[in-house]
Image (cartoon, rainbow, N blue to C red; front, side, top):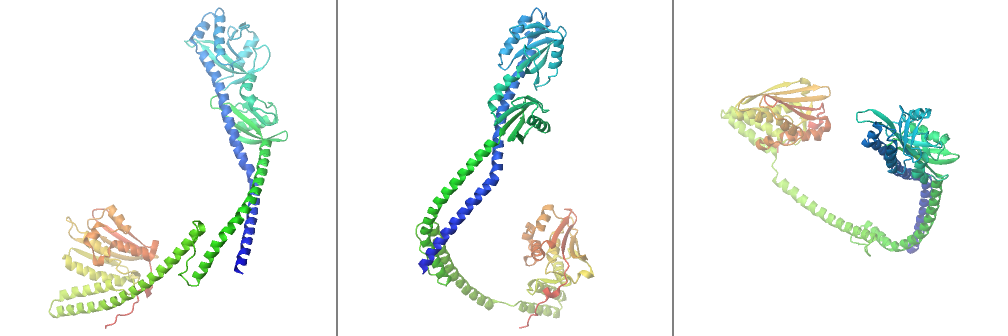
Amino acid sequence: MVKSFHKNLRIRTFAMVMLLNFLVILLISIFFQQRSLSFFEREFATTLYEQATTNGQRVDAGWQSLYQVTVHAAFDPKLQALMQGDAGTNSEEVAGLLRNYKNENPLIDRISLYNPATHLLIRSDEYQSVQTLDSKGDRWADCITEQAGRTPLLAEDLLGASPKKVYLYNQALRAPDGTFLAWLTVTCSERSLYYEYLAALNQEDRNAASLYTSDGKLLTGSLPEQSAVSEQLGAKIRDHSGGQAHLTVQGQEYLAVWLQLPFSETIFCLLKSQNTLKQEMMQMQLLCILSALVILLLSSVFLYWISLRLAEPVEDLAETMEKAGRGNLAVRAPVRGDDEIAYLSQAFNAMLQRMNDLIEHLATEREQKKEAELKALQYQIRPHFIYNMLNAIRFAAMMQGARNIGNLLADFVELLRASTNRHGAFVPLSEEIETLRHYIALQEFRLLDAFDVVFDLQEEAMDCIVPRMILQPLVENSILHGPSEERSFCHIQVKARCAGSQLILTVRDDGQGMTESCMRMLEQGQQTTSERAHGGLSGIGVHNVVERLHLYYGAQASLRYDSDGRSFTEATIRLPVSRDKQETQAPAESDD
């Protein structure tokens, strides 16, 4: 019956695990379908941005090389000297120098020098390198002077045999004294730069690469200048010099990323079709589903084998737990191998052993506690016996005429009674003040009138409930540490008043003051060196006051010190007003 039950349990467990596996795979597939698009889009955009950055750096390096040739040629001393002389006579030599600069960079289409005053044009071309321009020269001068800085200018080539678009950099060639000599212009064919850097990135219906100016004008690329997508990109570039966006071109979705090139300040833009991404995602999802089915099949075989392997040790452990639950703590589970089930069996056996040890230990402790209580009862001395003996000594002293000693003994008896009273941790403030007066009388006798204490007590505060011996450590601190060599007599003032829902107790002296670090230590309940050295009545100390305030009232009570370090110290206790006398009620002591 038991074996049949366990076998049935294994089958049901296996079926539940397989159902759970199927549901998990189904949920993962649905979740992947919903979330994979955004994930792959982010990865797709990151890859596309990295590709745009790499290719944009190549384009920017091309612009930089053109700009460097322009600057080097414009500041060439030999070229300046030839143009400063008879430019017509030296024109062939100037053209030769321009050809040398042109040969430095394969991107350069032409380098030309044009003097608007003489309309003389000198080019790096082999054919007709020197020309005199008419009105075309004025149009050329107006065109090239629009270029400034490191951003190239896209313009019509007015000097070529056939019209075409070129990029140009322009610099003024000046004599050493600053006299303008001519405009030096470096041109690069728009198609040459396109095929050098962008053509390999353009794939029909898949990729497109383009260059824009910072104000959104198309410089080059596979996109037509007046197309809708080009205008959309231009508008987005005008708003942000770098970013990404989704665009729809003739029903196809594209992801566009663009960034501003640091040297030329042009915008490099790269578009990639998302149809390829979606196809790849569908293939990946299909592959995941097939993989999940294979995993499901393999896991079913593996789980069935695991269920058979785990069943026996688990059943043994369950049987051991059942016996232990019935109170048989001597039973132990069999441990087979070193797998997790064996670890559980060892841990359960160790727990049973600890329970046995704990029961034996508790029994031993109970016996020892009983013996200790018997010994404590045998050696206990009741405090009222001490009070009676001290009172007998006091009466004997008064009968023999030593009234002063009798009064001191009376003060000591009352103080001892208050400090050893275990019936209640709280007393009315009036009783606390009375205890404090007994303590002060003893200290006045001990220290030969080295201080005096003045009380300023509000009548309303006298019936408030306070912790027992809460003021004595503060007054003791003023008595022991207030006097100094310069001021041997100390005046102490004890004040009590109610302020709304708070009872404020203050102890102030005009002694030598207290350092800032000492005050902070006392407020935090730390025992200072002076407290440890002098001690006090029953060793209570200010730190004990702080601990009891925190224990009884939490954040509602506090002890704060104030001192200038020279002439006074003031300790202030704030605690909630309470007039509940139940805490102070205690049964009267018997006289036996």
